[in-house]
Length: 292
Image (cartoon, rainbow, N blue to C red):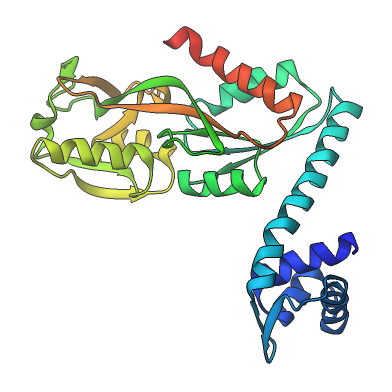
């Protein structure tokens, strides 16, 4: 049995289509079919039921898939560990975030500590982040909201972030320091789309007190909300860590309700954690410690 056979098998098992698998692997269909055939000969059983170019994992294939995934996973973990040991000052870091407001300052602090480390950041939903953690495609996630406990995912809450109400200067509430949610019932809001943690949390809390916010703008860029508030398009729910120092915006605390979001670090319990990832987690914890 060869490593290449296992790698090809995983791709075919995922796509269940010879043409698509060959295209993904950049090999000919003939070469791919022969490799899978040799693997089946080595194992002594067929792994797929074939219908034209369509393949379906059979009972043998499903059983073997779990073992093959585990074997390749362990080899990849070994490669990562050796890279970490051979180049402790360098390395790479794959990050995924939903809570991006504090990220520039965190990355600045991390780069000062590890200037040679290369990092790549993806903005993902919480569901996508957990999926990438399971697949080993990201090392650490900075998430809001925190995730429910899973067997393989560690969740460390690092900050409880109050959500504020941002209004333009000249607004009827601009001279206030706090406001009840009920007073916002007739307001127009600007916000991100459903699926973002802050939006979903604010909508849920508002609904619990008897109204649903009316949005005149819903987008994918949280950083744009401050400019829209300043332009008097609407008011917005903005986490305290995303507060902007624009002169034409005033921020109010929310009275009588726990309108806060949890910011959490996520990582996979069973995967090798590089020294780079461990140090990033320390930088995140140190960043939020003075704010608590």
